[in-house]
Amino acid sequence: MYRKLLGSALCVVLVAFGLVVLASPAMAEPLRTLASARGLTIGAAVATDPLANEAAYRTTLNREFNGVTAENAMKFESTEPNPNQFTFAGADQVVNSAVANGQRIHGHTMVWHQQTPGWVQGLGATQMRAALQNHINTVMGRYAGRVASWDVVNEAFNEDGTRRGSFWQNTLGANYIADAFRMARAADPAARLCYNDFNIEGINAKSTAVFNLISSFKQQGVPIDCLGIQGHLSIDFSFPGQVLQNLQRFAALDIDVKFTELDVRMTLPTTPAKLSTQATFYTNVVNACLAVSRCNQITIWGFTDRHSWVPGTFPGQGAALPYDENYNPKPAYNAVNTALGGQPGNDTTPPTQPGNPTVSGVTSNSASLAWGASTDTGGSGLAGYNVYRRQDATDTLLTQSTTNSASLTGLTPSTQYSVVVRARDGAGNLSTPSGAVNFTTQAGPGGGGPCRVGYQATGWGGGGGFTANVTITNTGTATINGWTLSFAFPSGQRLTPPGWAATWNQAAGSGTVTAANLDWNRTLNPNGSTTIGFNGTGSATPAPASFTLNGATCTTA
Ligand code: 9MR
Image (cartoon, rainbow, N blue to C red; front, side, top):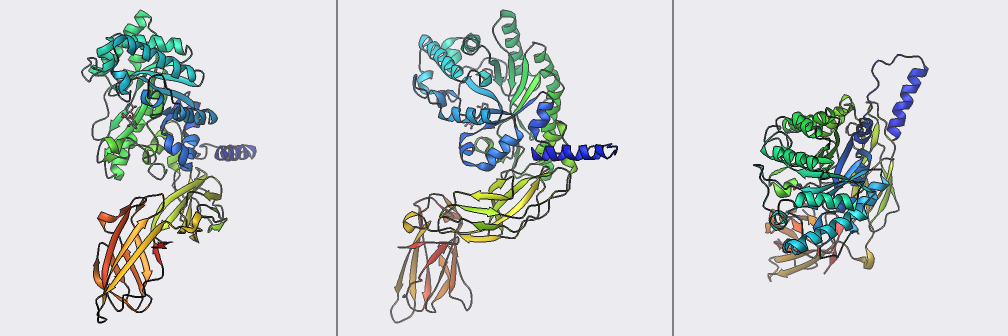
């Protein structure tokens, strides 16, 4: 918001001084501002876990999108897992967040052959119809006035245009779709009712079957208000043909048309060329929608590659969304922004380097940071700051902030943190990192650290040396992915390489030993342990006094 004000203020100043502004300065507006200026909703599918647990997820979602769809939380199995036992925690969470952030809610979905509980699938026709009626009444009734449109029926056709032989179709007969729309209209007369499907972007056998169904509904007076075109695309195939003509023929039926689940996957790893092709696909969709006045919504199925259904469903593929896994905009973001009339691409100048952070209020799991503010002269304006934990030259995003301070939460007790800050502008340019601030969190309740080490050394007799086995246990609540154990020999012992079950090292002339995980024991789940070991010269005792794992002090068993 302040970027927009800043931009407007700049325009006002220029006008006040009588300057002729031929091209307005590049001001990267959020997608939602650009979209609503064109009467369009730009939505994102929302997953409940990151919505509850990730500040950066919420910040980006609420800054950029003026529409949301629950990715899973409103589905039949989520809302009515057992007959007439409704659970609305996840759906309410999405709805409450959307209402608080002025986002239009698209409901997904009433009738689908997936994610519908087994108890429904086994019913006979009379009971199944009653169960559907009750489900539609209860769920749509609950959200009447808040959910603006619903996918009433989802994915009812095969690729060749025949009806999918789902349990709905097989038990209730072909009229189940019309019946569901009638039930939906009765449950919430104000909601816009959509039919939703995939692979119907262009003109083909399937989209034509859907077209024929909706035409017949219109002739027969079956209530229907919109078509949802999912838009799960892949750059490994060509962009679908005749998208514009397809949108136009549906709009001519006097219904709204929406892209409801847009994403554009690719075979990993990403390359600049693939990301650029992906950006073109996104541009094509936005341009097609803008060209048809009844196309009023584009919802992306997620928004960050950190949370996407693609890698789990198509192994080796992913990177389908406009933001990368660290919430940085990709070329696809700039493409959507540009197609909506924004100018994000003009700014290639990163903000200035933030001042070095200082830390205060360190507890066992939280800390407060503040740093010197950055400025941005590239045109898109300062968007905020990314706060990273630095480990072994790798930076991992901890949180984002729109001001020059941040609260870190969810930290691990008794753990060293090295934290740097980078400023981010509206075009996604990142500044040089600030210097690092280092601090160690306090011990957790009971003094326990995130790890426990058991060290057992057995001498060979005659002072010839010893064999040591070291068991490392993850006593924290988070999975440890990659670790280095460190300790110091207290009385001149020497490690005899290579040791086992870890990459062992002892620097010449130093008592400090490190052991880094191998591939097979890289992951230590909570309560998980691994045993590593080595032969050494010198005496088996005394044992090292303390051990650290990834910088955190471990308790000693
Ligand atoms: O993104 C959803 C994923 O988290 C679920 O596991 C999956 C279950 O089938 O459904 C995904 O969403 C689908 C949507 O509901 C309907 N169209 C296809 C979407 C991607 O599979």
